[in-house]
Length: 471
Image 1 (spheres, rainbow, N blue to C red):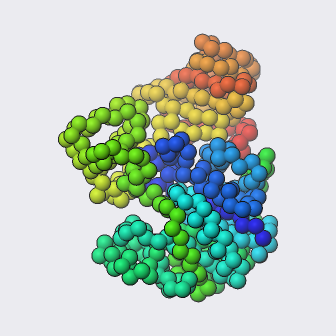
Image 2 (cartoon, rainbow, N blue to C red; image 1 turned 30 degrees about the vertical axis):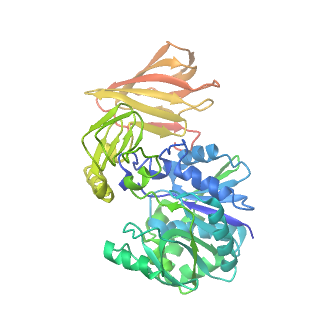
Protein backbone atom coordinates (compact mmCIF):
# COMPACT_ATOMS: atom_id res chain seq x y z
CA UNK A 1 0.00 0.00 0.00
CA UNK A 2 1.39 3.38 -1.02
CA UNK A 3 2.00 5.96 1.69
CA UNK A 4 -0.56 8.77 1.93
CA UNK A 5 0.94 11.99 3.33
CA UNK A 6 -1.43 13.83 5.67
CA UNK A 7 -0.36 17.44 6.18
CA UNK A 8 -1.71 19.03 9.35
CA UNK A 9 -1.95 22.80 9.00
CA UNK A 10 -3.33 24.61 12.03
CA UNK A 11 -2.49 27.23 14.62
CA UNK A 12 -1.58 30.88 14.24
CA UNK A 13 2.20 30.66 14.61
CA UNK A 14 2.01 33.17 17.43
CA UNK A 15 5.78 33.14 18.06
CA UNK A 16 6.33 34.54 14.55
CA UNK A 17 4.05 37.55 14.89
CA UNK A 18 3.79 40.06 13.22
CA UNK A 19 4.61 38.18 10.01
CA UNK A 20 2.34 35.31 11.07
CA UNK A 21 -1.35 36.13 11.63
CA UNK A 22 -4.44 33.98 12.23
CA UNK A 23 -5.53 34.29 8.59
CA UNK A 24 -1.98 34.14 7.20
CA UNK A 25 -0.18 31.79 9.62
CA UNK A 26 3.38 30.49 9.82
CA UNK A 27 3.15 27.86 7.04
CA UNK A 28 2.64 30.66 4.49
CA UNK A 29 5.59 32.84 5.52
CA UNK A 30 7.85 33.44 2.54
CA UNK A 31 11.36 32.00 2.85
CA UNK A 32 14.51 33.50 1.28
CA UNK A 33 14.04 31.56 -1.97
CA UNK A 34 10.40 32.66 -2.31
CA UNK A 35 8.96 29.31 -1.23
CA UNK A 36 6.76 28.70 1.82
CA UNK A 37 6.98 26.17 4.63
CA UNK A 38 3.75 24.45 3.57
CA UNK A 39 4.83 24.43 -0.07
CA UNK A 40 8.12 22.78 0.85
CA UNK A 41 6.33 20.23 3.05
CA UNK A 42 4.00 19.33 0.19
CA UNK A 43 6.85 19.06 -2.33
CA UNK A 44 8.88 16.91 0.05
CA UNK A 45 5.92 14.57 0.58
CA UNK A 46 5.14 14.39 -3.14
CA UNK A 47 8.71 13.32 -3.90
CA UNK A 48 8.46 10.24 -1.69
CA UNK A 49 8.27 7.08 -3.77
CA UNK A 50 4.87 6.22 -5.23
CA UNK A 51 2.82 9.03 -3.66
CA UNK A 52 -0.34 9.56 -5.74
CA UNK A 53 -2.64 11.24 -3.24
CA UNK A 54 -2.31 13.54 -0.25
CA UNK A 55 -4.58 14.72 2.55
CA UNK A 56 -4.46 18.20 4.07
CA UNK A 57 -6.34 19.09 7.26
CA UNK A 58 -6.70 22.85 7.60
CA UNK A 59 -9.10 25.68 8.36
CA UNK A 60 -11.72 26.21 5.67
CA UNK A 61 -10.65 29.86 5.30
CA UNK A 62 -7.17 28.74 4.24
CA UNK A 63 -8.23 26.37 1.44
CA UNK A 64 -7.41 28.67 -1.45
CA UNK A 65 -4.21 30.02 0.08
CA UNK A 66 -3.09 26.40 0.54
CA UNK A 67 -4.12 25.47 -3.00
CA UNK A 68 -2.04 28.34 -4.37
CA UNK A 69 0.99 27.16 -2.36
CA UNK A 70 0.55 23.62 -3.68
CA UNK A 71 0.22 24.86 -7.27
CA UNK A 72 3.57 26.62 -6.95
CA UNK A 73 5.06 23.39 -5.58
CA UNK A 74 4.16 21.76 -8.93
CA UNK A 75 3.13 18.16 -8.20
CA UNK A 76 0.30 17.67 -10.74
CA UNK A 77 0.38 13.89 -10.43
CA UNK A 78 -0.83 14.07 -6.81
CA UNK A 79 -4.59 14.13 -6.16
CA UNK A 80 -5.39 16.34 -3.18
CA UNK A 81 -8.05 15.92 -0.54
CA UNK A 82 -8.74 18.81 1.85
CA UNK A 83 -10.49 18.17 5.15
CA UNK A 84 -11.69 21.64 6.13
CA UNK A 85 -12.19 22.47 9.79
CA UNK A 86 -14.58 25.31 10.72
CA UNK A 87 -12.30 26.00 13.70
CA UNK A 88 -9.35 24.32 15.36
CA UNK A 89 -9.82 21.42 17.81
CA UNK A 90 -6.11 20.62 18.24
CA UNK A 91 -4.09 17.85 16.62
CA UNK A 92 -5.89 14.73 17.89
CA UNK A 93 -9.08 15.74 16.05
CA UNK A 94 -7.07 16.61 12.92
CA UNK A 95 -5.30 13.22 12.90
CA UNK A 96 -8.63 11.49 13.53
CA UNK A 97 -10.20 13.22 10.51
CA UNK A 98 -7.32 12.18 8.26
CA UNK A 99 -7.43 8.60 9.55
CA UNK A 100 -11.18 8.22 9.15
CA UNK A 101 -10.98 9.53 5.60
CA UNK A 102 -8.03 7.31 4.65
CA UNK A 103 -9.75 4.23 6.04
CA UNK A 104 -12.99 5.06 4.23
CA UNK A 105 -11.28 5.66 0.87
CA UNK A 106 -8.35 3.20 0.97
CA UNK A 107 -9.12 0.64 3.67
CA UNK A 108 -7.55 -0.10 7.07
CA UNK A 109 -4.15 -1.04 5.61
CA UNK A 110 -3.59 2.44 4.16
CA UNK A 111 -0.37 3.93 5.55
CA UNK A 112 -0.65 7.53 6.75
CA UNK A 113 2.38 9.79 7.13
CA UNK A 114 1.44 12.66 9.45
CA UNK A 115 3.42 15.82 8.64
CA UNK A 116 3.11 19.23 10.31
CA UNK A 117 2.98 21.89 7.61
CA UNK A 118 5.60 24.21 9.07
CA UNK A 119 8.83 22.18 9.30
CA UNK A 120 12.07 22.56 7.38
CA UNK A 121 14.15 19.51 6.44
CA UNK A 122 17.56 20.01 4.88
CA UNK A 123 18.45 16.39 4.01
CA UNK A 124 15.51 14.95 2.09
CA UNK A 125 17.34 11.70 1.30
CA UNK A 126 17.80 10.97 5.02
CA UNK A 127 14.15 11.82 5.61
CA UNK A 128 12.97 9.52 2.81
CA UNK A 129 15.12 6.67 4.16
CA UNK A 130 13.59 7.12 7.62
CA UNK A 131 10.08 7.06 6.12
CA UNK A 132 10.84 3.82 4.27
CA UNK A 133 12.08 2.22 7.50
CA UNK A 134 9.02 3.46 9.41
CA UNK A 135 6.71 2.03 6.76
CA UNK A 136 8.14 -1.44 7.29
CA UNK A 137 7.68 -1.15 11.06
CA UNK A 138 4.12 0.16 10.70
CA UNK A 139 3.20 -2.88 8.61
CA UNK A 140 3.55 -4.89 11.82
CA UNK A 141 0.79 -2.94 13.54
CA UNK A 142 2.89 -0.33 15.31
CA UNK A 143 2.60 3.45 15.51
CA UNK A 144 5.90 4.98 14.48
CA UNK A 145 7.20 8.36 15.60
CA UNK A 146 10.26 10.09 14.20
CA UNK A 147 12.84 11.24 16.77
CA UNK A 148 15.31 13.89 15.74
CA UNK A 149 18.88 13.27 16.93
CA UNK A 150 19.49 16.40 19.06
CA UNK A 151 22.09 18.93 17.99
CA UNK A 152 22.27 20.31 21.53
CA UNK A 153 20.23 20.98 24.68
CA UNK A 154 17.11 22.67 23.27
CA UNK A 155 14.34 23.87 25.63
CA UNK A 156 11.83 24.66 22.87
CA UNK A 157 11.16 21.02 21.91
CA UNK A 158 9.58 18.04 23.61
CA UNK A 159 11.71 14.90 23.97
CA UNK A 160 11.30 11.16 23.41
CA UNK A 161 13.16 8.63 25.53
CA UNK A 162 13.80 5.56 23.38
CA UNK A 163 15.77 2.34 23.54
CA UNK A 164 16.31 -0.22 20.77
CA UNK A 165 13.62 1.42 18.63
CA UNK A 166 11.00 1.34 21.40
CA UNK A 167 9.53 4.47 22.98
CA UNK A 168 9.87 4.50 26.75
CA UNK A 169 8.20 7.85 27.37
CA UNK A 170 7.42 11.30 26.01
CA UNK A 171 8.70 14.31 27.95
CA UNK A 172 7.43 17.90 27.86
CA UNK A 173 9.74 20.81 27.02
CA UNK A 174 12.40 20.77 29.76
CA UNK A 175 14.40 23.52 31.43
CA UNK A 176 18.00 23.98 30.30
CA UNK A 177 19.62 21.78 32.98
CA UNK A 178 17.32 18.87 32.28
CA UNK A 179 17.78 19.30 28.53
CA UNK A 180 21.54 19.00 29.04
CA UNK A 181 21.02 15.79 31.01
CA UNK A 182 18.79 14.36 28.27
CA UNK A 183 21.30 15.06 25.51
CA UNK A 184 24.27 13.75 27.56
CA UNK A 185 22.46 10.47 28.28
CA UNK A 186 22.19 9.57 24.60
CA UNK A 187 18.72 8.07 25.16
CA UNK A 188 16.65 11.12 24.24
CA UNK A 189 15.55 12.49 20.88
CA UNK A 190 13.62 15.62 19.93
CA UNK A 191 9.93 14.98 19.35
CA UNK A 192 9.40 15.92 15.68
CA UNK A 193 5.60 15.64 15.65
CA UNK A 194 5.79 13.37 12.57
CA UNK A 195 4.19 9.90 12.64
CA UNK A 196 3.50 6.93 10.38
CA UNK A 197 0.90 4.21 10.92
CA UNK A 198 -1.74 2.07 9.25
CA UNK A 199 -5.21 3.60 9.37
CA UNK A 200 -6.66 0.52 11.05
CA UNK A 201 -3.96 0.59 13.74
CA UNK A 202 -4.77 4.21 14.58
CA UNK A 203 -8.52 3.62 14.63
CA UNK A 204 -7.97 0.88 17.22
CA UNK A 205 -5.66 3.10 19.28
CA UNK A 206 -8.13 5.99 19.28
CA UNK A 207 -11.02 3.72 20.15
CA UNK A 208 -9.01 2.55 23.16
CA UNK A 209 -7.51 5.86 24.33
CA UNK A 210 -9.69 8.73 23.04
CA UNK A 211 -13.01 7.33 21.81
CA UNK A 212 -14.78 10.67 22.20
CA UNK A 213 -12.30 12.32 19.81
CA UNK A 214 -12.72 9.52 17.28
CA UNK A 215 -16.52 9.57 17.57
CA UNK A 216 -16.71 13.35 17.14
CA UNK A 217 -14.37 13.40 14.16
CA UNK A 218 -16.18 10.48 12.52
CA UNK A 219 -19.58 12.16 12.87
CA UNK A 220 -18.18 15.47 11.61
CA UNK A 221 -16.60 13.74 8.61
CA UNK A 222 -19.64 11.66 7.70
CA UNK A 223 -21.84 14.79 7.77
CA UNK A 224 -19.35 16.84 5.75
CA UNK A 225 -20.28 18.75 2.62
CA UNK A 226 -18.21 17.42 -0.31
CA UNK A 227 -17.13 19.39 -3.37
CA UNK A 228 -14.81 18.55 -6.25
CA UNK A 229 -12.70 20.38 -8.81
CA UNK A 230 -9.70 19.45 -10.96
CA UNK A 231 -7.70 16.90 -8.91
CA UNK A 232 -9.01 18.43 -5.68
CA UNK A 233 -11.70 17.12 -3.35
CA UNK A 234 -12.79 19.15 -0.34
CA UNK A 235 -14.82 18.03 2.68
CA UNK A 236 -16.23 20.82 4.87
CA UNK A 237 -16.68 18.97 8.16
CA UNK A 238 -19.88 19.50 10.09
CA UNK A 239 -19.44 22.42 12.56
CA UNK A 240 -21.88 21.14 15.20
CA UNK A 241 -20.31 17.68 15.47
CA UNK A 242 -16.80 19.12 15.32
CA UNK A 243 -17.55 21.60 18.11
CA UNK A 244 -18.49 18.66 20.35
CA UNK A 245 -15.14 16.95 19.64
CA UNK A 246 -12.67 17.36 22.54
CA UNK A 247 -9.73 19.68 21.88
CA UNK A 248 -6.61 17.73 22.87
CA UNK A 249 -3.20 17.18 21.33
CA UNK A 250 -2.38 13.94 19.53
CA UNK A 251 0.53 13.29 21.91
CA UNK A 252 -1.70 13.51 24.99
CA UNK A 253 -4.63 11.63 23.47
CA UNK A 254 -2.77 8.71 21.89
CA UNK A 255 1.02 8.67 21.85
CA UNK A 256 1.60 8.93 25.60
CA UNK A 257 -0.92 6.13 26.26
CA UNK A 258 -0.38 3.61 23.47
CA UNK A 259 2.01 0.71 24.06
CA UNK A 260 2.67 -0.28 20.44
CA UNK A 261 4.83 2.81 19.72
CA UNK A 262 8.14 2.58 17.89
CA UNK A 263 10.69 5.30 17.19
CA UNK A 264 12.89 5.85 14.14
CA UNK A 265 15.84 8.17 14.89
CA UNK A 266 16.71 10.54 12.04
CA UNK A 267 19.31 13.19 11.28
CA UNK A 268 17.90 15.27 8.43
CA UNK A 269 18.58 18.94 9.16
CA UNK A 270 15.18 19.32 10.81
CA UNK A 271 13.71 22.49 12.32
CA UNK A 272 10.16 23.38 13.26
CA UNK A 273 10.89 27.14 12.90
CA UNK A 274 9.39 27.70 16.33
CA UNK A 275 10.58 31.27 16.85
CA UNK A 276 12.15 34.26 15.14
CA UNK A 277 15.54 33.10 16.37
CA UNK A 278 15.04 29.81 14.49
CA UNK A 279 13.77 31.51 11.32
CA UNK A 280 16.75 33.88 11.38
CA UNK A 281 19.07 30.88 10.97
CA UNK A 282 17.63 30.30 7.49
CA UNK A 283 19.25 33.55 6.31
CA UNK A 284 23.01 33.96 5.66
CA UNK A 285 25.04 35.86 8.27
CA UNK A 286 27.55 38.65 7.71
CA UNK A 287 30.93 38.87 9.49
CA UNK A 288 29.26 40.37 12.59
CA UNK A 289 26.62 37.62 12.76
CA UNK A 290 23.83 39.85 11.46
CA UNK A 291 21.14 38.42 9.22
CA UNK A 292 18.51 40.35 7.31
CA UNK A 293 15.75 40.33 4.72
CA UNK A 294 14.77 43.47 2.83
CA UNK A 295 16.60 46.80 2.74
CA UNK A 296 18.72 47.27 5.87
CA UNK A 297 21.79 49.21 7.01
CA UNK A 298 23.90 48.39 10.09
CA UNK A 299 26.43 50.48 12.01
CA UNK A 300 28.29 48.90 14.95
CA UNK A 301 25.72 46.06 15.15
CA UNK A 302 26.26 42.41 16.12
CA UNK A 303 24.10 39.28 16.13
CA UNK A 304 20.86 40.96 15.02
CA UNK A 305 18.12 39.81 12.66
CA UNK A 306 16.03 42.33 10.72
CA UNK A 307 13.03 41.62 8.51
CA UNK A 308 12.16 44.76 6.53
CA UNK A 309 9.15 44.69 4.23
CA UNK A 310 8.26 48.09 2.81
CA UNK A 311 10.99 50.47 3.94
CA UNK A 312 14.62 50.82 4.91
CA UNK A 313 15.45 49.75 8.48
CA UNK A 314 18.65 50.99 10.13
CA UNK A 315 20.29 49.80 13.36
CA UNK A 316 23.10 51.52 15.26
CA UNK A 317 25.09 50.30 18.26
CA UNK A 318 22.92 47.34 19.28
CA UNK A 319 23.33 43.58 19.53
CA UNK A 320 21.23 40.39 19.65
CA UNK A 321 17.97 42.06 18.61
CA UNK A 322 15.08 40.81 16.50
CA UNK A 323 13.48 43.61 14.46
CA UNK A 324 10.47 42.61 12.37
CA UNK A 325 8.92 45.48 10.41
CA UNK A 326 5.65 44.96 8.50
CA UNK A 327 3.20 47.39 6.93
CA UNK A 328 1.06 47.69 10.06
CA UNK A 329 3.15 46.38 12.99
CA UNK A 330 6.72 46.52 14.31
CA UNK A 331 8.29 43.98 16.66
CA UNK A 332 11.52 44.65 18.57
CA UNK A 333 12.69 41.88 20.91
CA UNK A 334 15.89 40.48 22.38
CA UNK A 335 16.89 37.14 20.90
CA UNK A 336 16.76 35.52 24.33
CA UNK A 337 13.05 36.43 24.53
CA UNK A 338 12.07 35.05 21.12
CA UNK A 339 9.74 32.44 22.62
CA UNK A 340 7.85 35.17 24.53
CA UNK A 341 6.50 36.82 21.37
CA UNK A 342 3.53 34.48 21.76
CA UNK A 343 2.46 36.43 24.88
CA UNK A 344 2.36 39.64 22.84
CA UNK A 345 0.19 37.90 20.26
CA UNK A 346 -2.14 36.61 23.00
CA UNK A 347 -2.61 40.15 24.34
CA UNK A 348 -3.52 41.46 20.89
CA UNK A 349 -5.96 38.62 20.33
CA UNK A 350 -7.60 39.22 23.72
CA UNK A 351 -8.03 42.89 22.77
CA UNK A 352 -9.63 41.90 19.46
CA UNK A 353 -6.89 43.78 17.62
CA UNK A 354 -6.95 43.40 13.84
CA UNK A 355 -3.16 42.90 13.78
CA UNK A 356 -3.61 39.48 15.40
CA UNK A 357 -5.85 38.27 12.60
CA UNK A 358 -5.01 39.95 9.31
CA UNK A 359 -2.21 41.66 7.46
CA UNK A 360 -2.84 44.94 5.70
CA UNK A 361 -2.72 42.79 2.56
CA UNK A 362 -5.33 40.05 2.84
CA UNK A 363 -5.53 36.99 0.59
CA UNK A 364 -8.82 35.85 -0.90
CA UNK A 365 -9.69 33.02 -3.32
CA UNK A 366 -9.87 35.54 -6.17
CA UNK A 367 -6.70 37.51 -5.34
CA UNK A 368 -5.69 40.08 -2.71
CA UNK A 369 -6.66 43.43 -1.26
CA UNK A 370 -4.41 45.91 0.53
CA UNK A 371 -5.69 48.64 2.83
CA UNK A 372 -3.81 51.77 1.75
CA UNK A 373 -5.43 54.25 4.13
CA UNK A 374 -8.48 54.55 6.34
CA UNK A 375 -10.04 57.17 8.54
CA UNK A 376 -13.39 58.50 9.72
CA UNK A 377 -16.01 57.24 7.25
CA UNK A 378 -13.56 56.25 4.48
CA UNK A 379 -11.22 53.41 3.50
CA UNK A 380 -8.99 53.10 0.41
CA UNK A 381 -7.96 49.67 -0.93
CA UNK A 382 -5.80 48.31 -3.71
CA UNK A 383 -7.55 45.26 -5.16
CA UNK A 384 -5.86 42.69 -7.40
CA UNK A 385 -7.96 40.01 -9.11
CA UNK A 386 -6.39 36.93 -10.69
CA UNK A 387 -7.01 36.28 -14.42
CA UNK A 388 -10.36 34.55 -14.86
CA UNK A 389 -11.38 35.06 -11.23
CA UNK A 390 -14.40 36.91 -9.91
CA UNK A 391 -15.73 38.11 -6.59
CA UNK A 392 -19.12 37.15 -5.20
CA UNK A 393 -22.34 38.89 -6.22
CA UNK A 394 -22.80 41.01 -3.12
CA UNK A 395 -24.20 44.10 -1.46
CA UNK A 396 -23.35 46.31 1.52
CA UNK A 397 -25.76 47.88 4.01
CA UNK A 398 -23.55 50.67 5.31
CA UNK A 399 -21.15 51.77 2.58
CA UNK A 400 -20.89 52.87 -1.02
CA UNK A 401 -17.87 52.14 -3.23
CA UNK A 402 -16.04 53.81 -6.10
CA UNK A 403 -13.86 51.61 -8.34
CA UNK A 404 -11.07 52.99 -10.54
CA UNK A 405 -9.23 50.58 -12.85
CA UNK A 406 -5.43 50.95 -12.71
CA UNK A 407 -4.49 48.12 -15.08
CA UNK A 408 -6.28 45.30 -16.83
CA UNK A 409 -9.95 44.97 -17.74
CA UNK A 410 -12.83 44.78 -15.28
CA UNK A 411 -16.18 43.16 -15.95
CA UNK A 412 -18.59 44.76 -13.49
CA UNK A 413 -22.17 44.02 -12.45
CA UNK A 414 -23.57 47.22 -10.93
CA UNK A 415 -27.23 46.93 -10.08
CA UNK A 416 -29.04 46.01 -13.30
CA UNK A 417 -26.09 46.96 -15.54
CA UNK A 418 -23.12 44.89 -16.75
CA UNK A 419 -20.20 46.96 -18.00
CA UNK A 420 -16.56 46.62 -19.07
CA UNK A 421 -14.00 49.05 -17.65
CA UNK A 422 -10.45 49.65 -18.90
CA UNK A 423 -7.49 51.57 -17.45
CA UNK A 424 -8.49 54.97 -15.97
CA UNK A 425 -12.21 54.17 -16.19
CA UNK A 426 -14.41 53.97 -13.09
CA UNK A 427 -17.84 53.17 -11.69
CA UNK A 428 -19.78 54.20 -8.57
CA UNK A 429 -21.70 51.58 -6.56
CA UNK A 430 -24.36 53.06 -4.26
CA UNK A 431 -25.03 51.58 -0.84
CA UNK A 432 -27.34 48.56 -1.11
CA UNK A 433 -26.68 47.87 -4.83
CA UNK A 434 -25.90 44.33 -5.87
CA UNK A 435 -22.50 44.25 -7.54
CA UNK A 436 -19.78 41.92 -8.74
CA UNK A 437 -16.21 42.33 -10.01
CA UNK A 438 -14.63 39.94 -12.51
CA UNK A 439 -11.34 39.77 -14.41
CA UNK A 440 -12.10 38.43 -17.91
CA UNK A 441 -8.53 38.97 -19.10
CA UNK A 442 -5.28 36.99 -19.05
CA UNK A 443 -3.39 39.57 -16.96
CA UNK A 444 -4.03 40.57 -13.33
CA UNK A 445 -6.68 43.24 -12.81
CA UNK A 446 -5.65 46.06 -10.45
CA UNK A 447 -8.05 48.71 -9.23
CA UNK A 448 -8.42 51.24 -6.44
CA UNK A 449 -11.54 51.02 -4.28
CA UNK A 450 -12.69 54.00 -2.24
CA UNK A 451 -15.25 53.11 0.43
CA UNK A 452 -17.36 55.69 2.24
CA UNK A 453 -20.04 55.20 4.84
CA UNK A 454 -20.93 54.96 8.50
CA UNK A 455 -19.44 51.46 8.94
CA UNK A 456 -16.58 49.97 6.89
CA UNK A 457 -16.01 46.57 8.54
CA UNK A 458 -15.28 43.49 6.42
CA UNK A 459 -18.39 41.81 7.85
CA UNK A 460 -20.75 44.29 6.13
CA UNK A 461 -21.31 42.00 3.18
CA UNK A 462 -24.28 40.00 1.93
CA UNK A 463 -23.38 37.37 -0.69
CA UNK A 464 -26.05 36.26 -3.17
CA UNK A 465 -23.87 34.05 -5.37
CA UNK A 466 -20.28 32.89 -5.09
CA UNK A 467 -18.17 30.46 -7.13
CA UNK A 468 -16.10 29.70 -4.02
CA UNK A 469 -19.04 28.44 -1.95
CA UNK A 470 -19.16 31.36 0.49
CA UNK A 471 -22.72 32.52 -0.28
